[in-house]
Picture 1: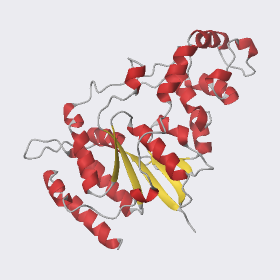
Picture 2: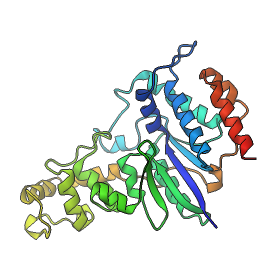
Picture 3: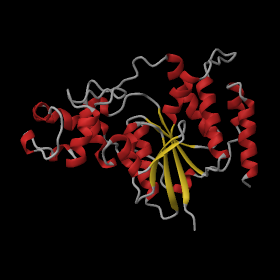
Picture 4: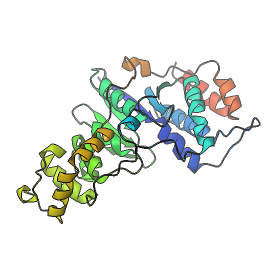
Length: 296
């Protein structure tokens, strides 16, 4: 028996992507809706391609518990107001279309996808969990044994464990450590000076996690250019590195679905037509209705 494919989508990433990729569309009420329309259309295409169980993670705000841990962590500063105004609009549109939405406040959408992936993967009814986002953070939950893969839908690339190793040079479980050393400008994680992607991958491929890396480069049994300076930097900044790893580690206790069947798409709500009318996109409601009829 073939198991269920569970699709988990980063709604916030998709909203940002469409905002900067498609022409503006302002309704008669003066509301910018282009990105919301784009994401909703993309989700309906996912259903048309055969997806049955879908969860969409969104951020209701940009800030999270991580801002309490580190002042430099990303905030909503710089987010275009016409984009930020679509956060609740997208959530309402997705729910009207019948999708299960994980709207995050204290956590981030990344946490929700990670938590949902791990929860879905232990269900014996599930065959694969497809984490649909190119975000580096989510590579940490890729697990061949559990059937969790990461999917970049735009580039049509699927990453299993070997794919993560090929891309980053480290195992999925070392991704938070790698991000702690290299940094992640998108999230406001500065990393440690001098530690680049290649040196971090080489060292972590050998030692796995920050705690296992010796303070003295003379104890390293891997060849890394500038090892002495890197070791000194790590020894002096180890506490900072551990904090950065905490920031890059997904919280798998984020609130998500109770059961995989909660993610089954069974058709849109009655008010989808009204929602799509406000989006100037009646055809999206028609597409959703046709998909529901085809699945009966």
